Amino acid sequence: MVENVSSPRIVAESRLIAGSAPDVQINLINKHRNDLQGFSAERTLVMMHGATFSSASLFDVAVAGASFMDVLAQAGYDVWAVDARGYGGSSRPAEMSRPPEESAPLVTARTAVEDFGAAVEFVCRHRDILRVNVLGMSWGATIAGTFASEVGERVEELILVTPLWLSNEPLRIDAGGPLGGYRIVSPRAFEAAWRSAAPEHARQDLIPDGWFEVWEKATLATDQASLYPGAIRAPSGAVQDVRRHWTAGKPIYDPAAIICPVLIVAAEWDADVRFDMAHDLFVRLVGAPYKRLVEIGQGTHMVLMERNRRQVFDAIIGYLGERVMPAA
Image (cartoon, rainbow, N blue to C red; front, side):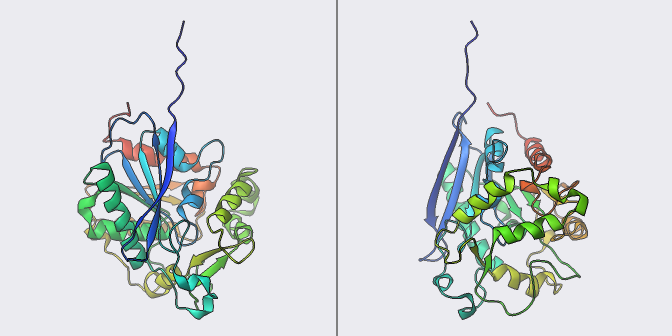
């Protein structure tokens, strides 16, 4: 008789930790396999979301049976996702309870780096490790890149997915006009911009049937205190970053100061972070002991939630696993 051995179960939890300021709490989502034997820097990954959608929305929406975090956990990683203040389950500045025009842009990358740093320090203490792998997506890649350039002793390997970088053209996230403290974002309205980045003939199949509805529901659940029906609130600091840095020729961090291995993942149809931007960043990573640039065909800025998402998963897991023994 052959014994029936079930597949490993994923342990999932969320917790609030103290942020870098007394009144700030940072939300962390953690997933790992229940049979993971011990924790190590090589098997630990801390991730940072982008400018608009929180970590639960970008990394932990289960479609086709699994989320990105689920896939990473099943591959043997202890994976953590961070919400900067003002996003998801983290505390929100008091100004976000008032109309956006009553305050200046909230939560710039500099502020988010402080929150991300607090999260990394917590994970290192909690798992009794000295370093972690770091992943950032879009604006989150700014936070991850800045952290790696300044606190390199904490970073094992760095992964930048569709990373925001210098642009000599306007970027879609900045619609122009005055900036309030936060933006009001409708996932349903966002869908049109999401699909429009792809060629017209590919827009319908870009997101498999049913996936957008699952993502929309999960995204709205990340801001249940929103006073705007069918919409979430997203701090405007990231747009201010675009104006003051990325379209002004003034990078927030120096890629040459990053001394760990780096993987950059770009997407063919990304209209928000064009391939020339990702390549320019790649060229400037002169201090990395090795680096890789992967372009995913037929994908947009939201490639982690599209039909070709598995190519991204495989590229990231393969990169991380090159110097790591298989999970037990």
